[in-house]
Length: 300
Image (cartoon, rainbow, N blue to C red; front, side):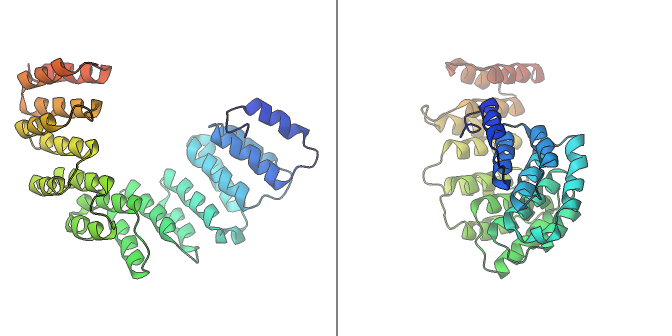
């Protein structure tokens, strides 16, 4: 409780008063350090635990290593992992933490080894590996994992679907995103999946497909509007972008909408239209002003 409210000093005082400390006690103080971004403290504490560490403590320390991402984290991650009893690899939470740690350091082969040790995999486990491959730019392996999930009839949730969508353009397989991921999302009005699809089709040369997806949304949210405006901007379709920007209700239009509209004007040299947008913005943030300055410099 104390750690949750950021009262680290009081938590430490209480910890020191405990006469008979257990692994649960050590786990609580270590997790408290991680919660308060004191990752060095968690690592130092782990090395001083006088008891034989269990799966929970290893999971906590792996999360600390992944979050630290400095020389100390790099050095200790291998020490901790190689010193851990291999029997602990049966613990699904611990394995997820280990994969996440190795993913952060780009160690794909080690993450694959840990993944191979899992006897009972679930959707979350597969999702962790898909994210590993996506971040480390191995989209073919993302699709391979996806096929394994389909074979095992596992549920493809929203984060997994979005990761797959983002991986598809890198290898030219865009049809999977619209045909299969729409099906597995179990929802034709999933905002984030729709947004990812718009963004995906808007990046290559098929702006028409992005438009089809956008117009299929009965009540677009602001994130979908912004994605479509960005897609127009990337294709030099400034007038289409401004037309869509003007259709956004003022009560949902946000800072991102303004910046997207200004960027679209910049790409198409529409200085007057950009000035019109800026004039209508009551609260001009620093980002908006910088975007307008950049536009004027580029189009002078």
